[in-house]
Image (cartoon, rainbow, N blue to C red):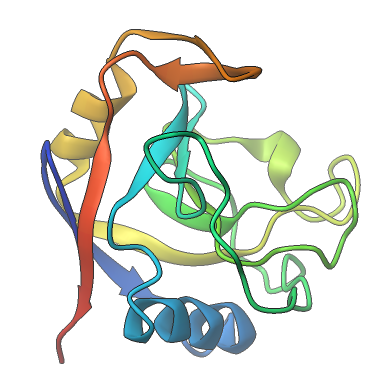
Length: 161
């Protein structure tokens, strides 16, 4: 079990190890490295998703490891409460950033518009915290849109079995 401790409360995650082994191992390694500690949810779009895992409170990108292979063709869908790897327009560009879907985002699924976004887990507890984060006021910050006005911090991410 994975726990994302935020300044709004805890979010517990169940990883889809069998369906997305590359994404799960990548996520676990970033947790083990302490990469997520002190990062923020830097992109919040109501009814769509909240994104984090790569920026500090000054909107500076943290260094990452190499990108991973996109596992969006694993049969999992970008439905409410699922976690997926964020990426650029390049299919195999995901590194540390992830997002939690706030609705059923069919347009992000494999084959909907392009290769899609790899779903690798689901919120098992704390969706109320996710919804609280989704409701924060946002603005433009350092050229980025949809940034929470008051920082939503990922204090720590831990693994427990």
